[in-house]
Length: 185
Image (cartoon, rainbow, N blue to C red; front, side, top):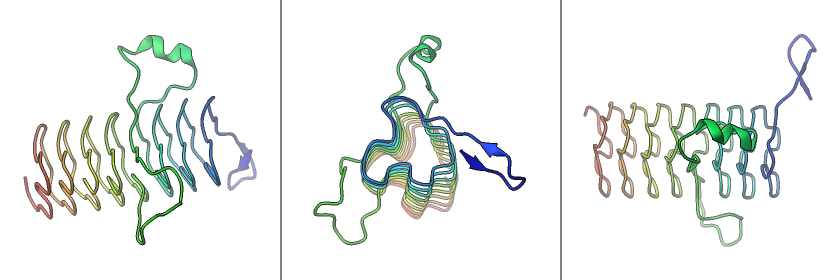
């Protein structure tokens, strides 16, 4: 258990099949769902709640400050859902072997809510500061340093909405580097 400023115990729940790997969930202060935080240093110093099948890959969700995905703490929780969450913040790279200089995992330094099925790929949603809709920002570099709210099914493509500062509606900015450095959409 951790303690708050008054010295009271604070407990965070880590579900089954979660937090597996070297330094995974180290200094974590959020709840972690089933099959989440997998891969070297995933969820390192995380402060948000991590949904099912999320934060899978090298340094994914490290230093995260917000909630990600759909919470499923026990299998019975799935009965209330139409389908199993696909997860968010997923990167193919799982360990530090042969990592290029400057590598950033999905959702590292994320500061805002990420919906289910979003932020798949290296650097996707890294240093993100605004809410990401369902099934958005899926490809390497998508929504990197994003500051504008992103709607559902948007910003899908390599570098899409990278350094975006304006709001992006649903079904928008799809394709390589679409809406990169956007100010208004």
